[in-house]
Each structure stands twice: as structure tokens, then as C-alpha cells.
Length: 580
Image (spheres, rainbow, N blue to C red):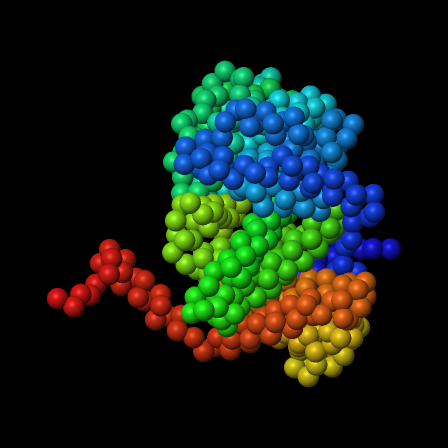
């Protein structure tokens, strides 16, 4: 029986490889695959041939209402809503794959659809009562109501605890006051998931989540924001002035809004990942066509090594991203209770891989790529937000690392408290001491244990699996070393925690790649999966070099000098030198 309480990455930081979580690589069942293939074909028929329209809407900064009606009629706002309520009933994996196809055509369209399902109404799906679902599901599925997620404020971005919007209990309703900024779908939404302070405990605000609809008196939206990218998608402020929110519109537990918000974001990140994969696939196609058709010095530019390096790396990044997105979405569908670290890793890796791919694809296109006539510059502008929204990559790196270090710290704390009373409880005390000593011996010597092996990887991937096993031991030792070195001050050591997070990111994505390539070899044979084997070899080599560089920098780095230079710039409010 599957233990759905296991987190692959949280276990990995303790030196344990829970390979059953990731093997075998998930596959869609025949019926589901047939359904999604039909949906993908339909998406293509709806969106193909509209490149000039998408470009014009980007310039105008608006998506016409007639096109929104087409999206409604197609059913793209009902992807995750149960079939009995008029939706398609997709799980995270099917939803992610569908959004991938939309993103291959246009990011603004993908975000309009994705913000609705990934975060706008996700709280209703996760926390809604049966009465709330009965009231809103069908309207949301039809796109009669489009949804938006309202958390960010002028003074509250990554620091959600700083939300100033209030919802005061007035007996039969809550009185809502405040303003939200940068709300995706704000100008077209009728259903808002809103977070507001409902209590103060020890000087800290407690949040609650509410369903708010546009027709409630006091709800207003601002003008369309003039953005760098995703210009055709509606982004506005949303303001609440003495809005009377019925008690039955409370979403989730009272004062439990922070957890509601985090779970919505964790669950919705498969949509972001799917969108990045779609954009990368389009960019690879554009780059490959240009590389084979554009001639310089008497031959296609694709013959030159540096162009091959760019396109080959794009392929590696896309394959690795798709592996991680697919596996993480499947974990959620399979009922794993805690995928927050894995979801954060996917968001970081996918958004940064797309940024590199967009940049290199534009570079491959040369001067033409810089012109608005071609899609490269728009894709570059559109994808930049992915590293900022739904949790900035900087904050998510801290979350990934500190979650792991908290787990390690808890084990050390338990051991320390047990050893204090070791003579009162010798069996418990010596048991913990023995377990810790065994783990440290494994990290130092590579002594095999039941959970130190990636044996489910195909034999052809044994060198890469052994590298993964070695790096896992190094990761556990790194977490242990950082905690012992910095103790409770580790929270403020962001250079160190970033390095730990980067190792964790590489290891999780590597594990996903090895799972996927194993499945490919088993299905197609070594010859049929040769190119995928190359992907595994390239990615593992790159991940290993990055990880070992991060290990070395635990004690040998220039962190203090970099911080001092930043403070130097703060004091002078800029750069201090000039050649004059």
C-alpha cells in the first residue's frame, strides 16, 4: 500500500531515497490519453492561424470580448471542474498537459485560462463546501463567471502576513475593506478568492479566505495595467469598500487563510509548469527551423557548434522540465499529502529554464529575433513574470531549503533531548544515537542502506544513478553541516540556504529525468530511447558539477565581500566610481 505521507525531497535531505514515489514514471491511461489528445487537437484548431491576432492584441493591450466568448464556448474555463457540474473533470496532470498546448500558441491566452483554474477558483475546489460548489461550479465551468485570486497588496507581496485588507465580523456578515494589486483576470472576473485579516494574535494578523463576487456593492476594479508582457491578459487593481460578505462565503476555516493560500499556490503550480513546457516546445521548433534555413558563410547556421550548443541545451531543459512537471502533477493526482517542496522546485526550474530557452532562441534568430515582427521578443517579455508571481523564485528557494533544514533540526533536537536523559531512557537514547551515527557513516563512506539506492533506474543509467546516490549523501551531509555551523541563525544565511536549495532542485529534477528515461528505455528499447539517454547523460553531468560547486562553497566563498559591496551601494544610493 502506498504511503502518501512521504515527501520525496524532505526524505532525501535526510539521506533517504524514497524511489517508490517516483518510479515507475506516470503514464496516462488509454482512455484519458485519448480524451486529452482530442482536447489538444481541438485547442490547436481553435488557436492555430491566429498569430497576427495575438500580436495585435499584445500591442493593443487587450483581448477582445468576442474571443473570450470563444474560450467559454470551447469549455476552457471548466477544465478542472467535475463533469457532473459541466466541466471536464481533469486532474492536475491532464490539466497541465492541456495548458501546455494553449501556451504553445499564446501566453496571454494561457494565463487567462490558467489563472482562472490554477488559483482563481482552486480554493473552491480544495476548500469549498458542497453548497458553495453547487452555487458556483456550473457558472465557473461555463465561463459565465471568470475567477481571480486576490492576495497581493501594495505592502504585501511575498510577505503574505502583511496583508492589510480586513474582514470584520458583523454578526450575519463580514465587512470587507482593502485593496489588492496586480490581479490577473481582474478586469474580466466575477468571482474573486480574497484574503483578509480577521483577527490579531500576539500582534500578528490571522488571515481568512472569502468568496467575493463582482455584483456585491463596494467591489470595484481599476484600469488595465500597462505591463511589460502578457499585455492582452487583464491585470488590474481590485478594491473593496464596505463590502458585506455573507458568512456562508467564508472559504476554508476561519483564521486559516494563510494555509489556504499556500495550498492553492502549491496545487496550482502544475499549470505554470505546463505553460512553460508549451512555450519551450514552440521556441525549440522556431529555433530548429531558423537554424536549418538561415545560411551564413555558405552553410546553414545550424551546422555551427555554438548554435548546436544552444538548441541542444534547450532540448535538455525542456525534457527535464516536462519530466518534473509530469511527475509532480501525478503525485498530487495520486493523493500525496505534501508536495509543497516538489511543487516549489518545479516552479523555479521551469520558469528559469523557459527564460534561458527564450533568450537563446532569440539569440539564434539574431537581429530578426529583436524585431516585433517575429514572436521571440514577445515570448521573452511574456515569460519574465514566471520567476516573480505565485511565489518569487528567491522566496521559494528559501522555503525549499528551510523546510529541509527544519526537518534536520527536529531530528537533532529529538536526539539532543533524548541524550540528556540517556540514563533514564537508555534504549531510546542509544537508539537515536545509533541511528544518527549510522546515517553519518553512510554520508561519509557510502555504506549501503535500504534507502540509499536508486536501483529502480534502468541498468543503462547506472552511472547517472550512482551519481545521484553520491550527491544524495552529500546533500544530507550539507544540511547537517549548515545547521551545525549556523544553528538558529541559519534563517538569515540566505547565501547558504540558496546553495542548499539549488542542490535540492538539481537532484529532484535529475531523479525525474532518470525515472522518465527508464520508462522510455523499457518501452522503446535502448535504440529507440537513445536520444533520451543522451538527455540523462547531459543533465546529470551538468547537475553534478553545479552541486559539487555548491558543496565547496559552504566554507569557501566570497559572500561577505558581496554583501559589503551591496551595503556600499546602499550608502551612496548607487554606483560609486567613474573614470572621469
